[in-house]
Length: 484
Image (tube, rainbow, N blue to C red; front, top):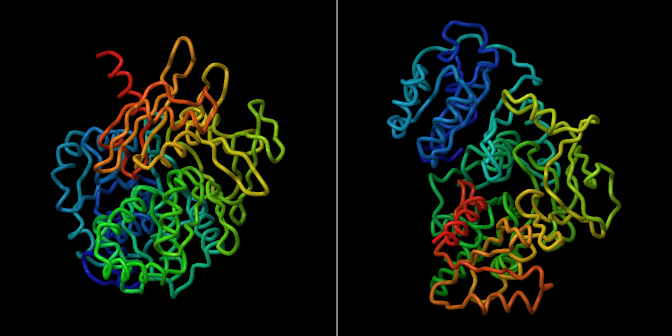
């Protein structure tokens, strides 16, 4: 592991996580599923803390370093941890919160470097390992409990599908409170004996310069990051562009996920680097469920098919499986699917069918054997004038406008239409486009009922820590505009 703190080996990881696990046990044989929250920047100490919690028999609850105090407080209140671990640079953000809730606050340097290693418990794979909080884009964040069996299944599926090996070298700058960074990158690298290089934060120039060394074999990011990398590439002089391009071409695989990949981004990235991004589909509760192939055609706008040991199907509103070519709601079943929502038995029961299928809430259609995501039932599927439409389809059209760099389409409640289709757009630097011009652009390409009735031009879209647009916040912007 190459991290901001230095370079470390697997032997280092076993040694330091063992010391920390012993401290967490405080003389007991086993944490027996106690929750341990931690607020630690991406790097070596984060990894050692995560392993320490697991080796002591606890459930790791990573907290987002980007979250404000109210969201950190929510995690502490909901998870009810036995202790919370903080990096010294983040101590002040947790000190009062932990004190008011009478939760012990431990600091990473002392935790990882002091004391001997005692005999640690044998932790069965069926036990809970990790609790990740949903992004909150559709409601109050819930704790998603994943067992060691779930994590193993997720990592093995990705290792098989994406041909991970010990010679791989992956760059990591994704947030480490989300399945994308924790499972797809960090844990997959550790599982396969690969090299994981962690950057303290994302900066487009830093990523390009690192890729230019031709050492990185795997790269995974979200669409927003790829867009920023593309924008940075065009700002550079020809010599830098060429070096960056050749470095990116040295990678064997580049993956995009956590949000829909706009076709213009896919095409621009392929034009620059020669890589056709592998798009996949997943969520906190299931890890990754669908993926385009490592070898073979990767169709723009599609996410391929089920990963190894993953069952996937589409069902109607009545729960009846629909044939290929018909839209339906995605249901997933397999060993990687989560155990439960923390302290929410009713919501857990509602999330599964009697046959054990997890109801994702996302809609898709299968065309020629490949899955195309239409969006979430409650967020991206709108019903206007009796017609169901996908906001993602409208967004793809708007993004193809030469003046538009990004956008988000939402359905604002309307007594006449049900959902009034509205679009928030961000224009490229120096570009100008009127609201009517943008509406006409969509009108020329989609059915009349899909044309946004209102367009709001913003400097940037509201996003969560993973770079995903928070559509409830976009809805609030339109509501505020209508009341002014």
